[in-house]
Image 1: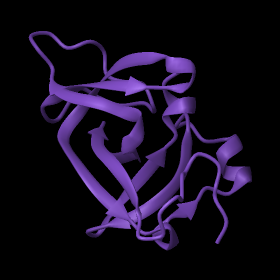
Image 2 (image 1 turned 120 degrees about the vertical axis):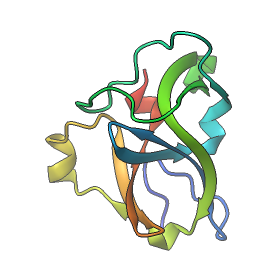
Image 3 (image 1 turned 30 degrees about the vertical axis):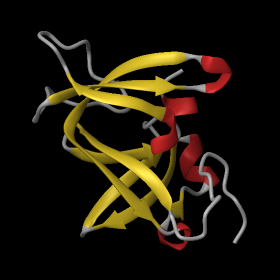
Image 4 (image 1 turned 45 degrees about the vertical axis):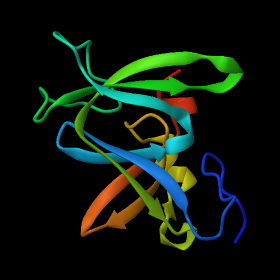
Length: 128
């Protein structure tokens, strides 16, 4: 199996992902892009607009992201936050034809985790 754009497959045992929720949907990104995740203090900034969503259903967290060229970005997402590892064979990449018309910026793959569909996003495309 070769490497997929937006997903690092450096270790055969798995890819570490940071999971969060937005608008009632489960999302994850490679944990290497997340410098920290802290509960939002006071009034949180607007939630990341990855797709059309309603008001937060859970606690809000501020993620400090490290993006290419040393760009740092703080984004607000819904919790609970979690780290998990997934085997590369368990990822289902987004077909190019679907990707071109997808409303979720940076969506690269899907995975089934504990019976839930998790959308794997590339923060280099989602949050720049």
